[in-house]
Length: 181
Image (cartoon, rainbow, N blue to C red; front, side, top):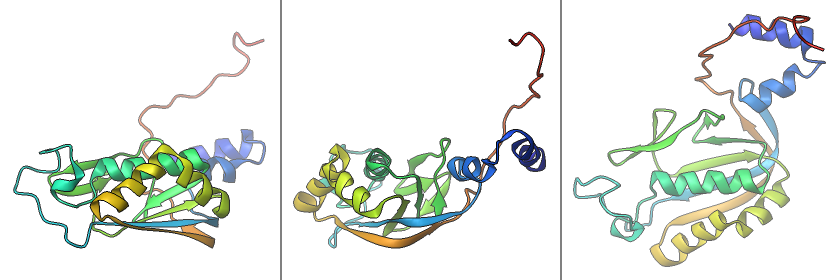
């Protein structure tokens, strides 16, 4: 499937195969960007077995939850990120950030804190715009009120791997010239 996709992009992609691959997460990318490290509060406690959905309150454990990480990532997309990876897991349009017990999973791979979120884009703009998003302000509230630790750093070069789990579920050839005008 990968060979067929690459061949079609070479033939019909108007020389944009690299761009399409980067946007889909199929190829590694690098460029300027930001590094956002998000970690549990220093005095974070493990849950009592009720799991991360036991309460909707962050303050009951002091731990970063899946929905916190989702908001951080969404805020970076909103701020203009071109590509994002969390703890080395490249995000795509099909990526999922969810919880399984106390663990946070990205595309079914468990993450361990601290959570390092790398985003490619104009570093200064990403940093500034992220802080102004609702999600950036949400992260600020978690820092100020619940002791979550977070640091946002502008980087000259950020390197993101290709996504590991790109799966084509359904494909069929497009017939040209039949009923098109």
